[in-house]
Length: 132
Figure 1 (cartoon, rainbow, N blue to C red):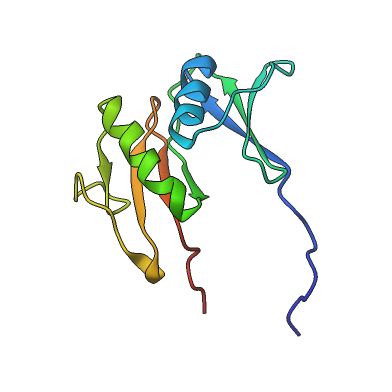
Figure 2: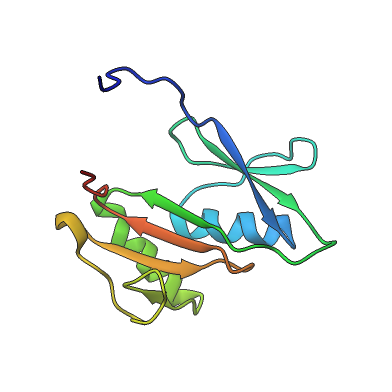
């Protein structure tokens, strides 16, 4: 029997970065958000839906690339692409980064992938994936 009510809601997740300020400011600038005040060793970016990305500096070993996908408003998408272009960051239509300077049109929306300063594979999309 399928679950009809939420069992758990993501509250926050730690994002490893070699420079937490650089990485948090980068993502916040692209998404049109602000970086919050430090909270212990974390530097939060509040996504506005009750979830924060808490940037944590990790300098003793290489950063393992992760994937973070953001559902964004259709009317905000073009501004995000423009901000990527303004700072010289290439965006791609695909997660493998083989289609530079292009967007995808999955599920009737628009999407793009780009790397953050530590190589995390960030995704912006205007429509959620349709799952079976």
